[in-house]
Amino acid sequence: MAANISSDASVTSWTKVCDRFKREFGDDAYQTWMRQLAYNGIDSGTVELSAPTKFVRDWIQRHYAVRIQDFFTSEDPKVKNLAIRLSVRREIKRPEKESEEYDVPARVAVSSPPDEGGALDPKYTFDTFVVGKSNELAYAAAKRIAESSEVTFNPLFLHGGVGLGKTHLMHAIAWEMRKNFPRKRVAYISAEKFMFEFIAALRFKDTHAFKQKFRTLDLLMVDDVQFIANKESTQEEFFHTFNALVDNRCQVIITADRSPTDLEGIQERIISRLGWGLVADIHPTDYELRLGILQSKAEQTANVIVPAEVLEFLARRITSNVRELEGALNRVVAYATLVGRPITMDMTRDVLQDLIRANDRKLTIDEIQRAVADYFNLRLSEMLSQRRARNIARPRQVAMYLAKQLTSRSLPEIGRRFGGRDHTTVMHAVRKVEDLRRDDSALDEDITRLSRLLEA
Ligand SMILES: Nc1ncnc2c1ncn2[C@@H]1O[C@H](COP(=O)(O)OP(=O)(O)OP(=O)(O)O)[C@@H](O)[C@H]1O
Image (cartoon, rainbow, N blue to C red):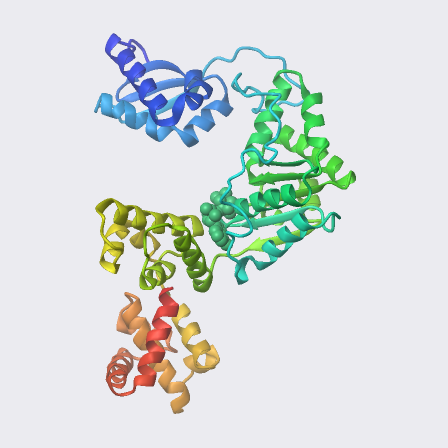
């Protein structure tokens, strides 16, 4: 514990930090989280705070600690670290299971109903969801649930990486259900909120109301179920809720960032149940889908024309996820609107410098070899062989050329990766292809297309 460190000046800093927190994150976050912290002072450049429970501490650590430290540093540049310790616990009566989850901020409402459509985002509908190879199964399953009065598969488990449209699809189902079956009780809740409500119910000894609320639904959607990993008692309740709903022929839809079998820290029996119905994976987007999504978003952007080459450029370069892709388009549109100039390629590159750099992925020689072999209908083994037939040697030279152009590998290294060839062979291939590109427009086009594919 820091000694003699809570001087008047540092207490004033704490007050200012609290004010800044409130301004940046709002009063709710302040009341729920920040107010739970006690300020102990600053010791050798480390701010010492204490939290009443591990849960609160971890939450603040994960969501707010970086900003809290920034606020302190801007008050006092000598602050270099932030330590949040657990304060001495007051005793509370615990439910059956020992778990870190029980202490919750008193403000979490016990009686609030699940979001029965109320908090749904009006932009997330089936109409605004662009379908491609990577998400067609998830889309079809979502549509089926929203349109049919029968439960055909239960649960629907949607999984995929961040920002690929899982939440969008859930909201779309809720909207559509509202339209098709207005009397059905549909609830959408994040697993995080489910946990909060459950903990609050325990705290206020109101688990009966909690159970009632969830077990009388026609459709329950739980987003980001990975959140309840290692939260034993929440899992317990989730499992019972889930079973009760399925037994009542109520549709359950779950999303997660990975497949049921890859979920860690979730009880085996839950994992096995999650896999009972339909498991639909949303894969990362391909170029065509990214372009389709951008075109659709650009059409919804009033008053600003986004040139096709800008959309193509974004679809090629921002590959991480749809949320980032959307963000990139929004940034360019906002900039153009602000400065009152039409959107151009130069402007786009300029505005998105950081994002483009972050998305620049390292292409490997192996990827190039596979792509070229595919493109020219060869087997990879043929490409790497010693055969000199023109239909094999030429693609091999093209692949070496692309490896030189698109990676930072040295000539000897590229040679080694092409069946142990000498660096002079690679040099010869690069020059040969450069010459051919000038004279052979068909080959030139092939190479342009291949580069695009590889860089997309
Ligand atoms: N196929 C699509 N068509 C149109 N918009 C999409 C599509 N996929 C994703 N989006 C948009 O991308 C953004 C991120 O999607 P969403 O929030 O649904 O992702 P998520 O998979 O739930 O991510 P997370 O795991 O981070 O919660 C949203 O604005 C959504 O509308």
